Length: 116
Length: 111
Image (cartoon, rainbow over all chains, first blue to last red; front, side, top):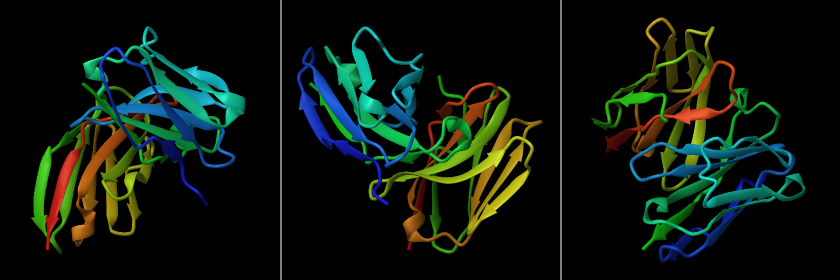
């Protein structure tokens, strides 16, 4: 079974530029998550989708971050404009059912973002 | 905000020894999960323990949960160099479905 795919793996941008990350979840997984992991900390949930609807985006900085899940499969996370404090690893995860709390989440390799 | 707090922040042991990591949390939970993260395999789910369970085993892993003390522990027995990684506890709060991770414990197992 193929895992969660993410691209790019690394990205370096200047502050105030925009950047987009892509995620392809495990086939058939209804729930998709985006996390931000700052160095030395645990992952923090940014947004959770079930199919193509948003379940929780309470910690997404909506003035600069946006995310969408096209046709309930792939997802993109965008930052515009980026700030220095956005430097982090962005992890995508997926799970099979509709209630993520009881199910195993499978994580992708992450995109490491450096904002200069 | 982060719910779980792992202790210790870092742990260094020799192969064959046991490693114990602790996690404390603040609010009522539905379940608690442990994850491992290393550069080779990324973030991987290890074990889930529900709020009505007290102990769970998976291979060399043993997890305990004490809801009265709002704490959990992860024991890795007979550790191997390949166990070198960061270990995170993550909680699912009652009434919610999202995971909240702690800051993690860095485990170094030396050959």
